[in-house]
Length: 487
Ligand code: ARG
Image (cartoon, rainbow, N blue to C red; front, side, top):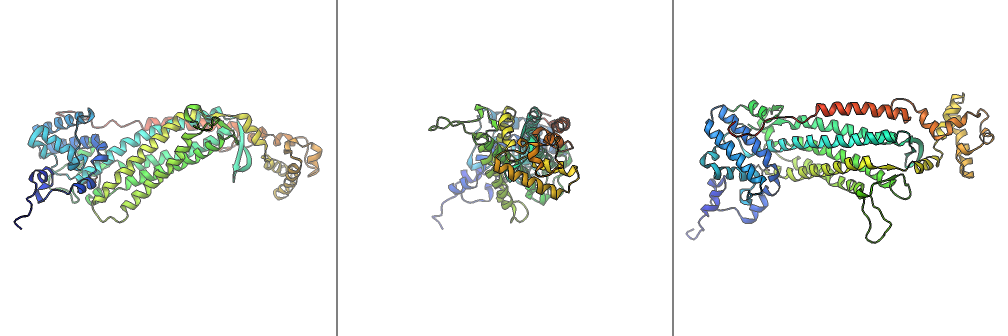
C-alpha cells in the first residue's frame, strides 16, 4: 500500500465536490460526463436564476445585503465576460453551472461560495431549462405567427384561383388555391395552441427542491418564482428535479408542427415540378445542379421535409430517456439537452425559411386551371344538379358515371359536351347545366362556412386575421425580472 499514488490534490480540490474523493477523475470520464460543451448555451438563464436566488436568500436573511450585492455584481461581470468571448469554459468543471460558480468565486472570493446555499444543480438545471425554453417558445410563437400571416396574405391573393382538389392524389373536385392554403393555416393554428398550452407547464419553477427533498433554509419560493416571471413554484420536490414532461411536450408540439410543414413541403415540391407546374418558387429559395443546367431544385421545402425526421427522432429520444428513470434526479437527465436544443434550432430555422418564402410563392393560375379541367372534376356537380331536379343521388351517380365513361372515350370534359350529348344520359338535363359544369360554378356553389367559394375564402381570411392579431397582443413577450447589480 505504500507505493499507492498520492491523490492529485490540486485536481480533486478543483471540483466543487472534490472533498470526498481520493483520486482525480479519469481523463476520459471527465470528457464523457461533461455537458459544458452544449449546456453553456444556458448561461444567461443560469445567471438570472442565480441572481433571483441570491436576491431571495438576502430577503430571508440567509445572505447579507452586501453578500447579495457582491454576488450580483460578480455574476453580471461573468455574463459580460461570456458575451465578450473572454470566458474560458473548462471541461473539468463539468457543466455551465459549476463553470459560472467557479468563475464567480474567482472574481469575488469566498462570498461566491455562498451562492449555492439552499439549492442543488438538480433544481438549478431544471430551472435553467425552463427559463430557456420559455424564451424560445415566445420567439417560436412569433415566427409561427409570421408564417401564418404570410399564408393569409397569399390565400387572399389567390382566393379566386382555381386548382384541382385531390383525394388519393386523383383529381376530385375543383377548389380555390386560397382555400387549399387555408387548410395549412388551420394546422398551424392548432400548432400555435399546442405551443401555448405547453408553455403553461414550462412556466413552473422547480427551484427550492434542492437535490430532491427541499432545503433546511427558510427560503421563499414564491418570491423567487415572481422574480423570474414563473406562474408559480412547483408542488413536489421529487417531481420538480425529475420532471422533464415539459420538454417532451415541447418536442411533441415540434414533431407535429414539422409533420405539418413536411406535408406542406411535399406539396410544394410536387407543385414546383414540370409535371404539375402549379407554382414558381423564387430563385432565392432554390438551388441549381452542378451537372444539369436546366435544374431549379426546391431545396428549402425538401430540407424542411427532411428535417422532420430528426425532430420526430428527438421526441422519441426524450420519451425513451425518461421511461425507466427512478425518482428523483439521475445523470441520464443530462441527455435531455441536445435533443431539446436541436429541436428548438431546427424548428426556428424551418419556420424562418417558410415565413420568408411563403409570401413569395407565385401561383401559375393558367396551369392550375387546365389541370382542374382534366379528370372530370365537376362530375359531382352534375350529380348534384340531377338530384336538385328530383333524381335520387344513387341514380344520379350512375348517370354521371356513364357520361364520364363517354368523356374518357371521347377525350372530352363534361363541360365540353353538347346539350344533346348530355341529354343522352338523362333528359332532365337542360341548358342551365352548363352553369354547374364550369369550374367557377363549381367552386362558387360551395358557399358555406368552411367551403371553397372565393367569398368564403375571403371571409375566412378576415376572421383568421382578427384572431391572429388578438393573439399577438395577448402573447406579447413578458417583461419580467431584470438583472441589475445591487438591486
Ligand atoms: N449537468 C447536469 C445536467 O445537465 C446538471 C445537474 C447535475 N447534477 C448532479 N447531481 N450531478 O443534468
